[in-house]
Amino acid sequence: MILAANFKMNHTRATTKEYLAKLKECEKPEGLELFVFPPFTALDRYESVATIGAQNAYGAESGSFTGEIGLQQLQEFGITTLILGHSERRHLMGESQELISRKFKFYKERGFTIFYCIGETLDIREKGDIQSYLQSQLEGIDLKYEGLIVAYEPVWAIGTGRTAKEEEIEEVLGFLSTLTPRPLLYGGSVKPENVQNIMRIPNCSGALVGTASWRVESFCEMIEKIKEL
Ligand code: PEP
Image (cartoon, rainbow, N blue to C red; front, side, top):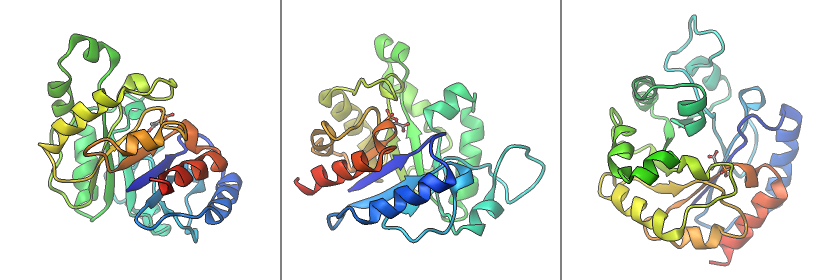
């Protein structure tokens, strides 16, 4: 099982260090893999029970790409794990599928573990054609890539406190499992109160957590809940 913390634009270098120090004290069950995605400025070579990853990166080694980081900057800290296609990058920063799939290809060729996010908007859910929308977000993505982890994160459930219903998650993960043999995660208002039920959903290998992961106490509480399963 996988439990991943996406800090988004929260935490500093100092508080990330404190967070990871406290995380060490939190007892992790065997078989649970932890990941933490701090902001770029807090990337470093930490000694941690969690694998540290980057929330995004441009698909180039280095170059004239103002405001981006690339392979060279990640390599400095031994980072080989990335989130790509997060809904905030797709919808707030306007990243196209073409751009995301180019980044995917670049980091796949360099053996990165890629948390690849997909998820429908509320509008698409209400219209009902969720499957073809999700498939369009998988265009250009090698679904057999051994470093791929797919995170299903319905946009309407991210940071809203509104978790998708278990049957809704189960239906989508069931569909995705017909497309890829790789692990499938759910993300969208996962918290200590619902993490157990989410982890029990068929085809669910874990959770990508935003808001509820920002306090280390709450992230540890989720680890405790998973331990009880
Ligand atoms: C996320 O941003 O990946 C996420 C799932 O956020 P939240 O847990 O806050 O909904």
